[in-house]
Length: 173
Image (cartoon, rainbow, N blue to C red):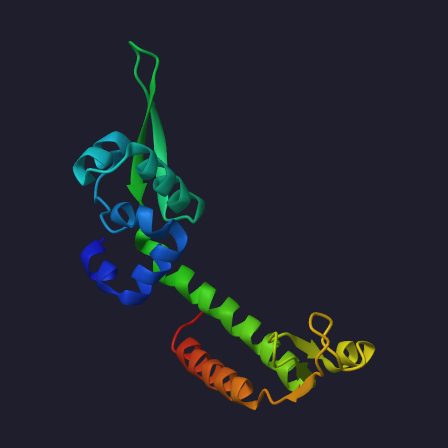
């Protein structure tokens, strides 16, 4: 697999960073073509073997790595040989985009269908029913709640949904 080309993509990098965190990025960004032992990878990358193991396990949990176990006949110790499985990373990204799109549409519906009130002092936002129960006063500071215009938020969400829908139409998810 062409790891180099794939790992140049900023979206792929961001996805890997989200999964493994900053500490695990050296491992995620340096996949090997052949199977590798975690200790060897740690030595090559000059990082703590615990970080390498943790990162490999996170990649494994996300179907981006696999391993096989070899047993040394003399010592009885097991050696774990890891392989990077980045072939399906674009499919996983598409699934994540689909989830994001669905969640954003639900949130957009919620924003459109509700009337909100806000405490200008504390920045706490309430739905109409909740604000009414509070007699339109903030439960934290007691100041009056003001009607909130969420049209800018709705507009921004509509733009994001439109962009995601356009992107998703290019891929078969």
